[in-house]
Image (cartoon, rainbow, N blue to C red; front, side, top):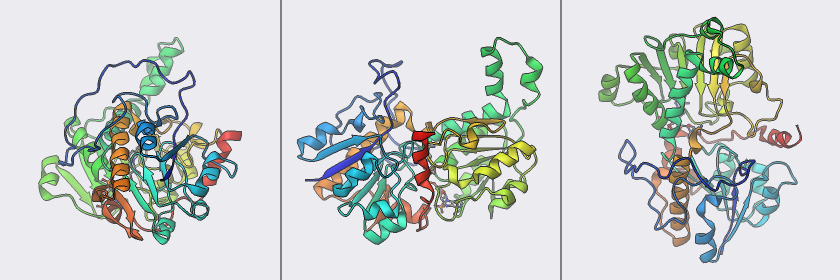
Length: 400
Ligand code: NDP
């Protein structure tokens, strides 16, 4: 029987909810590319409930315990004295969400001799040292597509709120003012702007599709080109490299995974090639941007705004410079963990666990590493190596 360690974010400060603003979730049958939603044999939760926090337990306890397994749920994940480090000694499966990532560095993997499966309840497994997982033949899987549309919606919201200067204008209302000129001296229309995505995978393409009705010029850079029919439908301009794209864009949205090829891609050099006054929206991973270079670009006016929900490390220490930099629209990492998304990824985790325990293959599209190599989605979208370096800094959130 297996020990499953599940690292989840804390419950709301006022306690686990007893009611919700809405009574149900819309029914979605398939993802836009035809992929089916998760297909577990059963679920033990009500879609729409808070599942991603400690008391929600991803709805897994009944299923795991009735099959004789042990489930440990904790939010205490950082530092050598954390519950996660203690529990790793005999854990077979570690489940983690990117919003509150259990960093599985090579050192931690070495402390987990029984670890066989690292399961991401969400998308993006960069919190696992993928090279160490490859070397140790640990399977890494995630719930592909579960929150891609959630993020795409968030990206559109953030682009509009930056370009139209929504957040500072909202703050004038809260402060009791009516300072129209202060609100509009940084406010523009999106119409006619050039908007480009770094990567046109599930999220990137969904963002492009959602932006099309805004009458903007659409651009993308990706290692693989989209089908010609899609390029035509969206009047899309493909760029062979990222520099070529950012030079012409007013808005750049980052939608690629974090892996050694994309780590610190947006550094001083690349930012200096962007149009003065461009905006960046990054909901992919914080480390794709050089933290201090972003601050410098906002302070100098090279960037007019930066928004997103991803930081490095997570949780961001209380003195993380992105909390205080000018013209930002940052939130904690939330875009992929709406209550709607949680229902899908909790069901996906259950599907993967059922496959694992019943000896059935995990869907290829969920696999990142398997059998000592990148596999499934991982083989297409990631590169081998490690992007967890520096993650121990997350422990500073506790003390800062
Ligand atoms: P996909 O795998 O569908 O898309 C990723 C795309 O990135 C692929 O098209 C891939 O290209 C491309 N890519 C990979 N490396 C590069 C590179 N070096 N240069 C250019 N393009 C590259 O994933 P999703 O769209 O669903 O998710 C993307 C990322 O978004 C996740 O990995 C995760 O980091 C983040 N995310 C954030 C969430 C949040 O809550 N903020 C939630 C969900 C995801 P190709 O395969 O063609 O080589």
